[in-house]
Length: 563
Image (tube, rainbow, N blue to C red; front, top):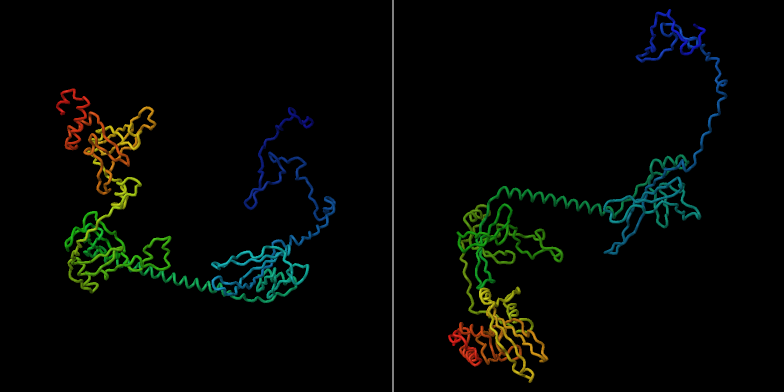
């Protein structure tokens, strides 16, 4: 069987083997499973001769690695770094100051200012920048005074400033401005020591008198603010104690005000409430005078406010142009001790006379304020003069309607004049009297012109229209729009207008400089005239009858009755 080829179909298991146990693959060491070297296989039979069991151990002491790996290479030479890499991000920092002389705007006085600066020297490219630390509320612009860059040395031509020119106590000149170095940081000191330069001891930076004055002012302001806050807290505590002590306790006074705006002028009576909890005053109008009067519903005269003694007495620096007078601008308000019977108080420009108070108010003044209120006083009506003012109406200027002019004289706010009765207008707005007119000729051509006049009984308005006629040379249409026409020669305040009693056959009407003569009327006008004889004159009725009789209109029984 050993001579058979090792191919599928020619491999047979050994039938003589009876032990087929598989040995363990791992060995345990310190609690860990470690694979062990396989020297035996299944059934504890030895493995192939190529196993590590038959490998020879290498003699390490006689092994020369150069025979296997060759000769070792020389160690690499160190890389030399450039100054750009060595000095990148490394800076020398100095603290110093500069003196600046400034002029005050209002006084034109010169003052010395000490401005602290921080000078940074960049070793990588020998550039310099100057920065002023920001001080809160300094009053001038701070920050970067000189941007980063190379600065020429004024003491050496064609040479820029080098770090070797820096040291404590040294005075540098950057573009005409002198900076004195006073101190530096620890890195700068170590750098100078490595370069063999001894750094000078640090010097103190002098105080800036300008900043010190500002700090002193701020401290004073803070003290004043603190005192004000303390005062506000005390006032709030005082108000709280006052509220807790006098809540729902109200003093009631009775006051009177002589109102000259009434027609006729007279006294108006009020009830004044003083709230002890917050020193506010509220005023209601009352029905009459007496100690038992009560306020009228919805008659609030003055809402609950702290009443100022003099509203116009405000500080001189108060901006009246852009602000209204508020509670903070007024300094004096009415207190309980100011309300005494018989005295006059000013309520936003009105003089109020205190003439009585209720029993609780009297007890409060006597027990708490140690003030005895006087007895009630009687408000006497002043003597009214017999002189009467008459309204003088100026003459009409000719612009607009006289009724509008008269209405603007009797009323401050322009209102449309009330010339008609609404009920009369609704009942008679469609009733119109029609008359035929003839112009009293000024020239010969006027005698041929005919006109139609309509009078509206609802609003007393008259309109005149010219009757068209062929080849007359005059334009037809309305001459006068519907309007109330005043009688010529009358005053505006007399209110005399043309009416039905002025219309009669043959009567002449002077309207706006032109004289018209009534020559005819329509049948409806004649009937209305007969039915309402009280609105027309007897002469007008007789003239109308005669006109219709001569013209042959008496044809019906109705016309006979109308005689």
